[in-house]
Image 1 (cartoon, helix red, strand yellow):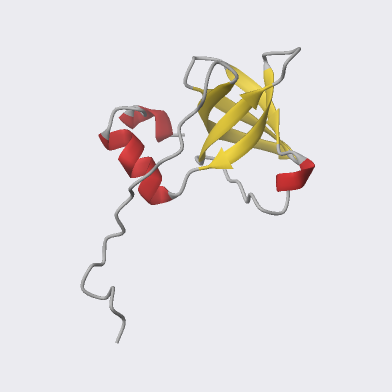
Image 2 (tube, helix red, strand yellow; image 1 turned 60 degrees about the vertical axis):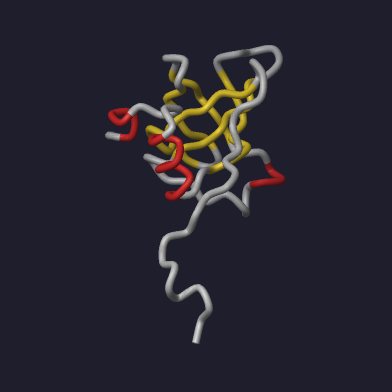
Length: 106
């Protein structure tokens, strides 16, 4: 018998948030092939982003996933996807006002 069987809902205690001006939260709009994608960021811009080689096999991304983008130093219209939120973390972000309800509808 599983000891967590009575508690079906997983409780999120910590959720990673963007740090500073160089990281932005966004939602994947479209995959462009390879490791590139269009991401609609919370600051109102749509950016062409990529998955760095070190995370290529760890992050499996689809349109509609909520991610954190690290902006490039020289070109702020491009960035790297560095983190993907799980569904329970996305619910926490919505409930605490970090994400708008209509942001996830594509």
